[in-house]
Length: 432
Image (tube, one colour):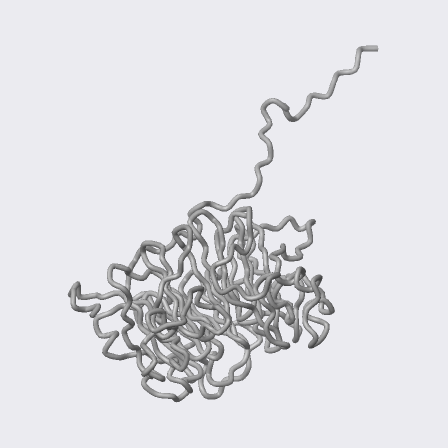
């Protein structure tokens, strides 16, 4: 009998490359270098417009004066404060500082919360985000600093195990972060390895890693140490290991979170879904990441959520809305009803939109031509139309400050809105 032949191995150990760890490109979220002027509108009762303590409200966009030689490349509106990022990686903040959201001392006229002031950080900042009472900065080296506090239905939760942080605090260590996103009272962090960490208020499921029973404090008597550790220390979201999912983008709503699967159009969601704003069929809270078919079939590149509604933008520049219609925040007109499916906004069908922003009850879209459209609640002048009337459909924002400027970004907070726009006529006086 002839000897048995050895089965030849289909692999050669010496030639087989080791399976590499999933890693996102370093430049996946390259910050824009385009500089512009900051325009503000809405409520200024605590200085969130940065226009001084004599101005209480603006119903049209007003020009904000920052320190010379600090051109702004990004803006973010928190609940009652504002954050600006300059081309040289510095942060300026203004607005309510009761719980440390400004990250700087504001105890005298020179360092007032009513005018922009710098925040001291150890490295160049490349990204910013802000919630109701907290602010976050992502540094060029991947470190993340935060300041302020989180809140839940019982009140102040603190930002860390030590409580409120009035100055920048490194919120997560030895984990390289490529993107940060803030809800009203929670923070989401995307790592270079496609993982997602969360911390803050988890009562509505927006952390994606707690059970309903363990998502909040037990009572009004304060939080136990175990509860604080569970909520305030950043930890990975609860995704089944068998799915082997990695993520390449994150976004936040006020009480919800949206994460995109790497190399795919699939979107997973968690948090408050009482008006269908997460694109799930059931109503209520979603405490662990769930696949949203509604958000996963539109080739979405940007998602922005308010309290009860969500805006979405696809690769073609088409804008969609879902959730509660009250105040016109969906932009679907006078006869609109609550939407449980993503609905393309008819008034914007002929425009290619480049970026969107949802405030608590407001919505904004910027077109490729640099035009700004608004809709939703206008009670405090936060739409910038010159009126306090609600807008039920997208309405072009006009005004003196936009006559020779092109809008590139907008951020809407609680009752105020911040716009970043560049001068189009090359006139040096245009920014004055």
